[in-house]
Length: 262
Image (cartoon, rainbow, N blue to C red):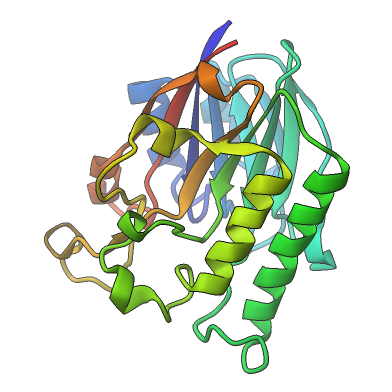
């Protein structure tokens, strides 16, 4: 079974319904995982997606914030969710394909602007969220699994436009990267994107604050596709759709793709 999977922080699925439909039409991934849907599940505009062949959806939502959804052409069943750090927020959902592969769709908290948990509660929540992810994967060792999403951390020096300038900026601080790596190690996760594209600057997010995001090119790779060690080598054809950042009224994130032969 070969299938293509994409992950995209859409920053409001209702506001950007037509952008989702355009991606589904142009690229036709078998599975699309969305984060920051900002919608209760019952108000996600599924009709247009279903008309394009995406008849299956597993989602968790809340009004105005967070929210994760998995749209699929392939049959999927709900595989649950976890409220890491007990934030009471819709940030994780899992679905299972008929071949037994479990897909985890995650939206890790951004963490605010100050990288100090004593001064910034949101940063502490982010670290606690990652710690509980780590502990869960240690005790519930995943296999035959894929994890995707906006993990809100750019771990490598070439995942940001300037390693030195961003060392004290939330998303690239050493303590966040350490927590990120611990989650990976706990679940025996492999970074599919970097396995395919091992060298060079690579971004999936460009700030809305930049007047000309493309020319400034001050990006970060915040969106990830991982696979457990038992299936990681089946992944290939990774790509990041940079042009999507230039679509009309875009999200500040762009889709990340990978294909799996399982």
